[in-house]
Length: 210
Ligand SMILES: *[C@@H]1O[C@H](CO)[C@@H](O)[C@H](O)[C@H]1NC(C)=O
Ligand SMILES: *[C@@H]1O[C@H](CO)[C@@H](O)[C@H](O)[C@H]1NC(C)=O
Image 1 (cartoon, protein in one colour):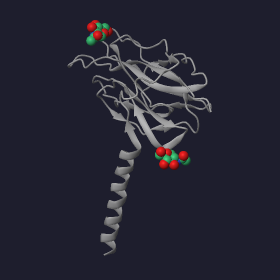
Image 2 (tube, helix red, strand yellow):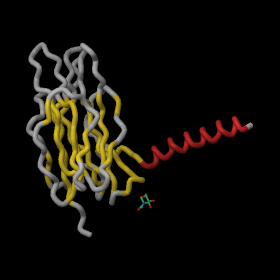
Image 3 (spheres, rainbow, N blue to C red):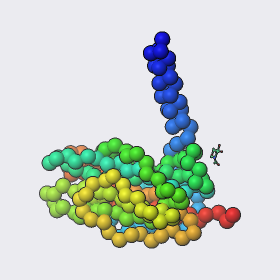
Image 4 (cartoon, rainbow, N blue to C red):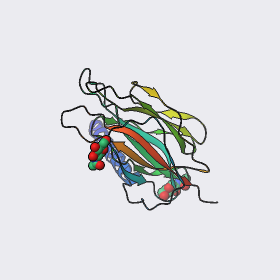
């Protein structure tokens, strides 16, 4: 009997965990793309392959407070792609019980990490770790990892790979924060060398006046 109750309790917890996830973290996709933004944050060390894809914006009054990354684990002699995507997690007034995510075009390899959040505040700048072009016969991975700076000052580093080096920090969002993302993605190479994510840039939005 006690055993049955335990099973029921675990089931209840599990199903409620699922419903919470569904209710409180939604993908925004391109739904909010008509949001006005002030500026774009870029870095200069992005790699050359692929094309800029589509932007995705957090809803009005929502700002990125955290992120997760999609990373392919090491392929040990196979075709590595390292960082495949970045997903921004957007909140309104820092309320983390109701979140939207945006990610633009991501690669198809690897798993999404657990989200990492600013202790408080919003994301305001970023830095990319890029492996330079490996030559015609080399294995390109392009983007390997990303760091963000929070308005409350700490920096957060993704759980990407260690190939290549970090470049310079982007500009900072002034009087606001990151509110959108656009990725530069090399399409699937059908058995040739995949590098997936090559570069990323972020939109800055102004905070509404109180
Ligand atoms: C994407 O960029 C490559 C160069 O990196 C170019 O050759 C190709 O035509 C572009 N594809 C599209 C769909 O624009
Ligand atoms: C956070 O947002 C949810 C959903 O809109 C709302 O029910 C809740 O009261 C908010 N929490 C705070 C602390 O404002």
